[in-house]
Length: 274
Length: 261
Image (cartoon, rainbow over the protein chains, first blue to last red):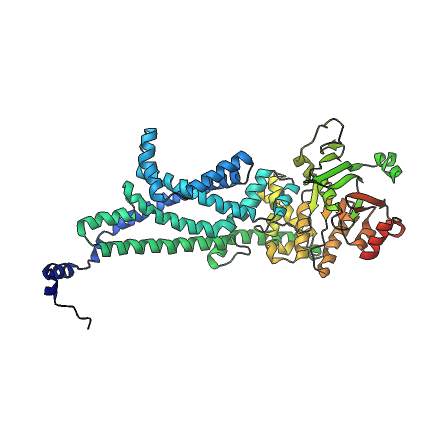
């Protein structure tokens, strides 16, 4: 009962059947253009990694401003609330075309992409860092201060490492979002994954094959990044968990064990007595 | 008491001197003018009901709480804001003060992201500027002193409360402080773990360390307390020496002891 009706009843049967029969799926295209896809992927990762580093730094500064005194906290809050709400597409067009009109300086697509992502994601990272820093018990800074450490040292050696550990799952999540957002930079001509796909498609007209490939690349990137961030979490977890993490921290462990041994030898009897 | 704290105290080696210390949180004054003198080698015990301000007094000594007014002197140098109505004193920096005073907290406050060893290495490197090798050597020796050398590579989460508190004591001691402050060091511990921490503190007291201890362990206080201070509602109610626990006369002190012992 679901058999195809006679094409002639549509009057356009000839055209329709032609278009259906013309669709062949040329998966060989993917392999033929593998180096284009590869360099598109590399460029997407490069833009997002530079933007990740910049937006983490700027986000941390924003978080501190947000937690600080009155005029500063107001500006930080305003920045966060404005830039959290701007889509990446608007941001990159604004930077690439708008800023160049304003300043007379022409950014390369790479620079514009990095700036656009940094503007947006530093706002998200600011909130992630703020919540992580506020989750630390006040006793942690007090212990550092009571030991005679200065406030900057307490921040960098006691608070920041612990806050980073708390923030890491959220940072990983955001970074996957950043990589996906590089896809909109096709509009400024950055030769990332989508631009590569579109370029090949315009010659071969194989949108299903090509965009399936693009989607698979993004999914694989997300899996890979998830794996990397999970490993980082394990390295920072205490006690250290997992084979890779244990391998990474094995030198520290060996160092401490040899120290224990040397001190035990020096005073073998009283080591377990009070 | 006044006589002991007067001319006699001057002859002794005065370490910490609080005078007229007041502290206000918001509109609530929790310390109404506290005087306290701690001489070298002396063991001062602060006790009293919760909310009496004894922890705030302790935290004023290393300026974790900056008094609203009053004098906080360490070895003759003023670190506090000064007594109301007198000219502002020349103040030493809190950083310098804290480098001579060790502190142990009720909640241990070990750094959970660092091993026991590196909890001690971090202040040794960043405050004492020791090299990595020297700091690790010294930290291992500090751990050995509290019987925890084998635990050097363990993280705080892997240790019992008593062990964590002993690491915290080792961490404070590794910086060679001249005074040690203890803020209810055994209150967060399981009863069976209290003994090991008190043993370390007892040994420290016998070794002549100057100590100020806020505690509910009156047995320990009776044993090591040279100068016992009972506080209530932000005021010192009664003080006394070694025999204080048998001879105290103030009805509030006696009532408190009766309810605790």
